[in-house]
Image (cartoon, rainbow, N blue to C red):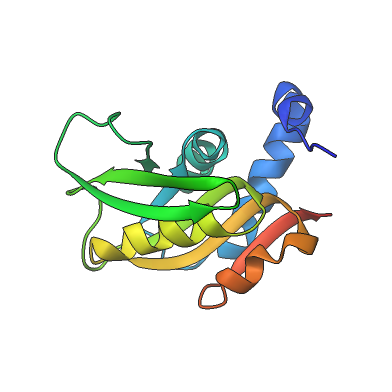
Amino acid sequence: MFKVITPLVRDPASLRLAVHQLLHPFLGQTITAVAGMEARGFIFGSLVAWELGLGFVPLRKPGKLPYDVQTVGYELEYGSASLEVHIDALGEGDRVLLIDDLLATGGTAKASCELIESLGAEVAACAFVVELDFLKGRERLANYPVHSLLHY
């Protein structure tokens, strides 16, 4: 079974509803930036950042950022990967809302949290459009508040 978000992002009303539901639990909280993982986290993360009036921090695959970067490597169920962020993208005092389309095993999300924290920032929470509960990714994010819209 493969879950896709393309019908959701194609429909304006559904996309708007998803974005509002992603950010709703965090209204009134101190959030200073939104971060999202390449690539689908960019879609939802940038829209959430825009709605909250905040900046967006892209967490990219290696070699995509043109400035000095901080890198974190992590293991996937089918190999290894890494993410990078500009070293000046976040810092002490920042409280970051991490956004992605899918929480599966939690490897990418956990690595993203570690990358954010390596810059001195705090992960305020993680939010996902879809969570595959049977893969238990939430367990790897036990130190962070986690919000998901759909559960499978």
